[in-house]
Image (cartoon, rainbow, N blue to C red; front, side, top):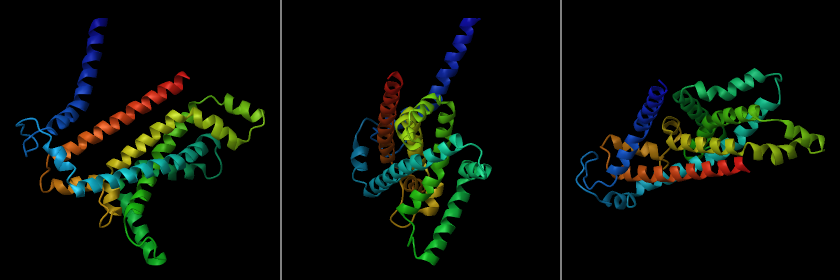
Length: 267
């Protein structure tokens, strides 16, 4: 009976991993395909990697997406950390329900509604204040930060609630100010959660299509928008090559973050 249960668990685990990773492995394999057709294997070749590095439009879109994702993740972690601290440490102050509801709104409101709302806000600001003059990197960044702050706040709030407060209370009893306790005690203890929140925000920003489609302007096309625009004309295998490079970079970052987290937990 026990062996059957173990076999069933391993089977379920294997099917889950196959469902997740077989499409990714297939994409990586076909990035080395010599054929111009995405699904027709004719032999091994690096021609699409050479074509990728000669595709200026795709590279510009990828570089823009990386910059926006980096800035979004950094700003979202800074703002979301303070929001999570307020939720978990400040108690139920007046307006707490409204604060928590507004903070978590991007989690439940459709991205189409968020995109339209931000677009109308920027258009009105442009007509009244003359700023921003147009839609571009800044407007996309603001939209992505608003979307990602809610996720960061939830992660940080959960980590702070599970954390033992005895170290913070001991530091306060020894005369440390609350701000010093936060930077010297609390932040190092929640560092793994901060890394996880940063990576999640980076991924959400890099992958976003809906909000970016409303807030982008001429000359500011992100990578997902560029790929979706090319789908109408038929994808070329250099997109597979770009996706393979993305997978390798993200995989290396995830491995490094996991090692740093394990080292931090051991220390």
